[in-house]
Length: 325
Image (cartoon, one colour):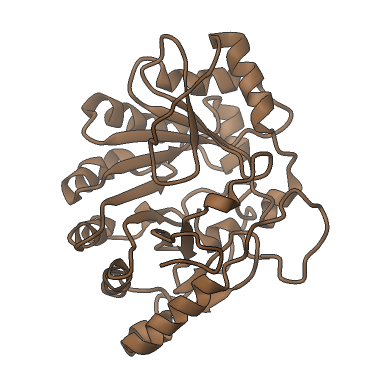
């Protein structure tokens, strides 16, 4: 599948639920958001059918997200189904890690290719203030199990926010020091509640890391399905990555679309544009499904404008938990 700018779309990020067991300040309000009804949310069979259909047209990589995907019962069943689709080369998941200890072996046995854990701090008080929950110990137990077992690739995602905390960034980076765990620093997305926070740019984080660990050396090889740029540090087994959508715009090489839990195909994170696929999945009309996918992908914008502070008439107003990470 190609969009109108010739970019190959071979990667989909699927939100399987809008529910979450945390309340991160840049993602949703403390009281949460009104959840979708169960009848609105796509079933595992509907998601599998969609991915099988899209695989015929070049889909190769799938990322499972939420909300928090591990709060949806039986997620390992979906992963096993997706792994069985001809043409699908990679199925990965991003989780907040609260339930990782419980689900780790289920995910591995289902065939997951990579587990990414979102973790912004190792300070219990800071974790509490960011997530509004006291679950840091559970997250760290899940990470420790994944590093000890080392059965699939593990990555950590961190969203630094101002004022920058040098010690905390270094503590997170050290997860990559003694194991083959990649740590990625992500610029906060000015979407929904993320607009309220001052982003910490890639250059600021690089300066902190190089001041404490030495020079970052660019890795020539790809280490994932998305836009991360990876670097090596002397003495580190894992790599340090950056996903810098604002300061280092990568729209020209964008290969992904997003699917919300209720079946809305989003082609750009910034804009409230896309196409609802659920009716065609529920009635299973391949012709209508194909044309909806084609229309949606051909309408994919050339790029975002996060770097501009002005308002756009079609700017996305949903929370990140409602979109999918």
